[in-house]
Picture 1 (cartoon, one colour):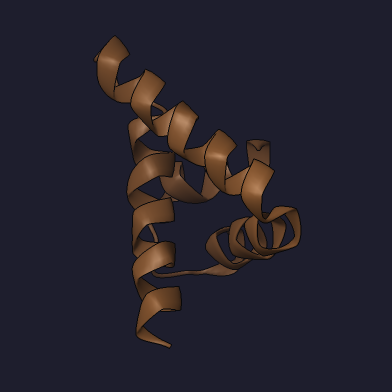
Picture 2: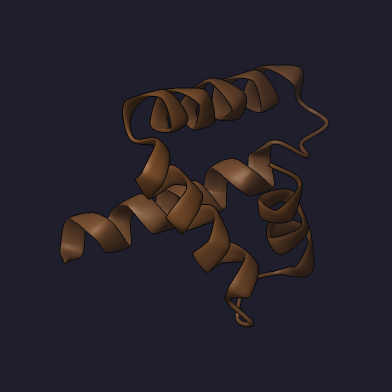
Length: 68
């Protein structure tokens, strides 16, 4: 369970970083998300849905989850 919570926290941070003005941070976040998608598509999609549905997340994080 702790591993799943950690992955979700990483996902939230990565989603936020995709909107960063810092190109390096943005590219690293995009690479992280692509690796997650490629290694576990069903988990990736479920995690995006969970982020989108999480009312405690910042609006920009939820929007990024919906766009991906």
